[in-house]
Image (cartoon, rainbow over all chains, first blue to last red; front, side):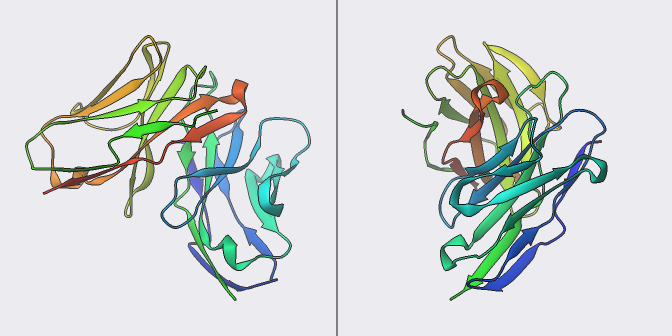
Length: 115
Length: 112
């Protein structure tokens, strides 16, 4: 069965520290990849997405992610986090060959940024 | 443009009852997907509708059902509610051809 694994469940960083959240998926075919963020009390918001082309994608709020096909990974990065980045982050994969709207989510990573 | 709208925001139901949740997608979006979010299981796919047809279904019992109308609005129904159905139910609209999936704020269902 297709699955998505986020290795870091809870990350605590100080402001200005660099961030990297891991995401691996299990599916051998073509994938569409997403990172979503859920701020406390708010709904899921799309941070960035990869469909094809340049494997390094840039999203909102200074986030970027790199798709490494050989490693089945799509790690999220930010050079310098802010207190306002405190949130839960979800990696999601759309691995259906017919591109139906089925997203498989990782378990999420809670990021806590200390001021 | 308006986002994905889910109603109601909160619901409290008793075990054994049934519930209907509503989702209005972004104008022009024909795909609507439903997800259940719980602390223990995370975000799990329920089903997806496209042009009034169920196109994909997750691993949930038959008590969970849905439908989509000609204006793309979708409803999700849960019959014979169980305590374990307490969750945040999220709806998303969009697709790869429109740049991704946008989520609504969800309906928080509490079963007592």
